[in-house]
Length: 249
Length: 307
Image (cartoon, rainbow over all chains, first blue to last red; front, side, top):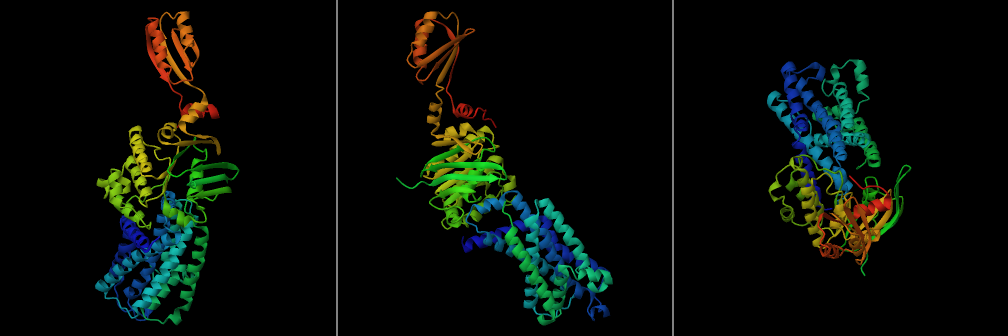
């Protein structure tokens, strides 16, 4: 296995992702569209509830969570289970392509796709609502990367146990959609009733949203240690579970 | 004497209480075209998967190109090519992309363009896998098996589901693979395919080896010999006697204007014709039947080998 193999495989996986119209829509166009829709309803006037920030200022970093959960819990499990169901993974197993190379290439291509969605979201937010950004780009990128890896790891766990692509799709959606609404990713945490806020505290996506919103306004990493710890924990535990239970055929 | 390319000793594999492969042993020499035939569920695919390292045997020893497929899989997979049964590619992956992708996995790949050319796929480079015909998909799977320039190629049920014309075309391509000096290991449940292609054939049934030899030797060992049948009017006893006297003829059966001559030699036809013409007998509907692997399987297992 060569570096050429890794780069060719990553590139191919990326191209195949972009050829799935639904996956491309939900990864790259869905969050910006949602942003425009809610922007028309709420605008971006400074609001006491958000500490003087506008609705769009807090929505853009929160929507990163929507992109991450879509790629990690819906995109990856469906694609991976379907590749197994069709014997594609088995075919790769009789070539010199190593399992680790496959995982690295796969994760890289999903990360790039999610990043493309983030870029589209931020560009739309900037042009349409002139959203404020007070953080550090590298910190935001690091936080986004940690969050994406954690959710891809959850996705691999779903793909490891799902007996078919259909089941993977169902499980992914059942887990992802309620989480989008209960975690503060779609509706800001501050607007959720107290009981829902208590539920939110148990959802992995809540920690992505808090981390991204924090880093977006320049909060120091030291104030976000809980979020980082939770996401790192998810990454390690889910990574270990998939390494143990992932099936190639 | 060089080392065998494949050496299997007492290979065993069970799924639950089912013994898929039951203590089979065999060797395949370099440059040989080796076939495994048997009905569905006989253990063909399990055997091939143990050789490819896709499955861990429960017992016995497996060496492929001198390597242990489970332990030295990474080294081994650089040197083998494989076509798998029931294995697809991503629907939207194009032929040319698939070839470049698989080429990138190997340290010394062949030129993808030349392989596609040889398999008649050069004009399909930009076609997505999902839009290929069944025969084209099989040809692409051969191309992908060859792109790493392997010493040993596995074909598992290569022509299943193809129509007879595509099957015969595929045979020619597989013969070319062997002609390039590669060792070929093929499984099939078409007896004719094994007979046409293989130097040696291993017949397995319910996980055990039933027979292992060249197709010709298997047929000879059956002892069924040749059968020549014809219809004739007014057979006289002396003609029957003359037919029985032909060297190699074992017996002659006479039934309702039809004569059947059984014999061990494959040179019975000329002397039979001589006898008939000598007696000025008019005959019609002459048929000769050579036993084939199908008959061998029937004789060895007591069952018909049909798909």
